Amino acid sequence: ILGWETEEQTHERPEMRPTQRMPNAPSEAVPTPALASTSASVRPSGATVRQFRQILLWPLQIESQAHTLAARQQAWAKPWGVLEREDCPWRRVECAPATDSLESKERQYKEFVTFLPYVQRFLYGESRSPGHQGADPPSDAPMQVFRRQDVAALRIALRPGEPPLVLPVDRVDLHFFVDLDVVVLKVEVHGEDLPWDTVLDLLHRHGRAYPSGWDASGQGVHNAHRTEWLAADGTVLAASDASDRQSYIDFVCERRSPRIAAHWAFLLHPLVPAHGDDAGSLRYRVLEYHRMPVMAYLALDDPRSLGREEFIRLGLINTFRPGDALPRRDPAVARFASRYCDDRYWTETDTGPNTRLICTGSTLVVVGEAHSPYFGDAIRGVLSQFRHQFLLLFLIAHFHRAALLVFEDKLVDAVNDLDIGDNRSQQRFRQRIRDNFESFLRFTHRYWFHELSERAQMQGLFARCATHLGNEAKYREVSDGMRDMSQYLDSDTQRRQSSTVVRLTVVTTFGLVATTATGFLGMNLIDETAAPLAVKLAYFFVVLGVAAVSILVTVAKSKALSKVLEDLSEDGRILPPRRKLRGIWKRRRT
Image 1 (spheres, rainbow, N blue to C red):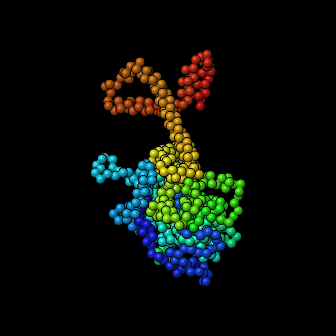
Image 2 (cartoon, rainbow, N blue to C red):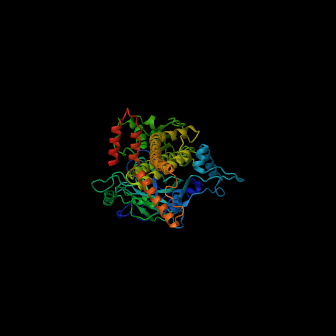
Image 3 (cartoon, one colour):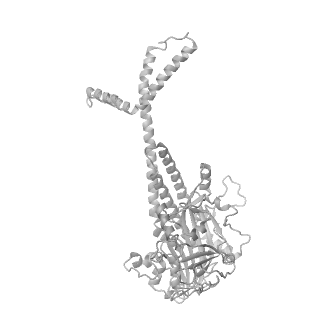
């Protein structure tokens, strides 16, 4: 389910040497390097990152465009159905224990036992027994993963005039969650022997859903100059369009929604933007800021050579632009080590270990020694933990926040669409609130948890990430909103029931007068026993019509009549008879 595969399968993509130049590049541009060699001297730099990995996570809200109720219920239950067509580039990720190597199975085992049982059920599904014959069969994992294999490399030019970098793409995955309108895109790339300044610039610029602005020349101020997804043969599958400033501005002005960059829209296809013109049965909306949460793995010859400022720039890469002066009085800068750093394996000695983990909520960075066999071990070492255990805890924390934001958005949307004077709008509002409340209960008991592992480092990182993201506060906020909505619906239901009881009481009271009168006068006030059947039917329908009209008029005037009954029932010392009659006369006139 989670992409268990051998490390040989991860790196078995053929080496590629693209010959195509980037569009608009000068003819004397430096040829694109091969995938196996990603080093590039972009700017003067200090330290060299021997091994670099970047994992981007992009939580999104999905919406189904199905027209019938049955189709919408099916789409909500399994929104990934659109990816299971033959012509779709996405394929479901499934475990293949019969073909996996022993090393890969060992890594899978270490990943599995890291988490507590209820987290294991969330990630991998319920336990299975060969002879299980019960009425309650084991369920599959609530998280379903799809992967596309056509994207082999990322070619990115960080700034105008600089030669592009070519980084191999390891994985492009989509994570779906049962009963929740949340999908998470995951993109993993890696490189070797990259200058420190280039790594910082890459972490800062790569992973933006759309440009945040442009300079005087029309170039994006924070995004990469140009980004391209390449196939295994070097073909350009999609390219960024950040320089098309007019289209982004017009899109926001016309639709009050940001336009997704072309290369990210390509990765998500056949999912399409909710406010775009492309046709699609499954649409997505941006939940948060355009900067995607990022994980980074950096192996250096000597990580102790990095100063405090370098670690701050690395951890707060989403906050401060590389090269800008750090605001020393900023709380995030002043208390950086205590707030964001996990230094339990940072000894600052020659013997090591010298591994530092930095978690700010939107970033999770691992820095260590390139010459350490354990740090670079892809089966049993820190690299394996980074790509699997750390990735999962980072994914879970951001999934929690995305789900809470979706619930909050649905509550706001339901209230905005409510029209108090429209009965159909009120019915639709009540149904939406009940559906959201039921979905929130399932989320609470299936997905929401505070502890995911007994291992101190894993639990500490998860708690630190959830705290910086504000998940606890957001959960309480959404829970209180759900409770307020539920109480409103309960009070509204009680009000309606009370009103109905009052109306029935008034009808019964006034009907009692007619019942008593007819019973006292006798059943044979009009003796038509020997009359023809037609005469009897005529009397019956006349009496039925008079009674029906009387009841309907009584119901229509039940509120006023209930006030009349209240006035009549008041003691004379409180309300004199003359005032009673005056009040009854006024209500009769109204």
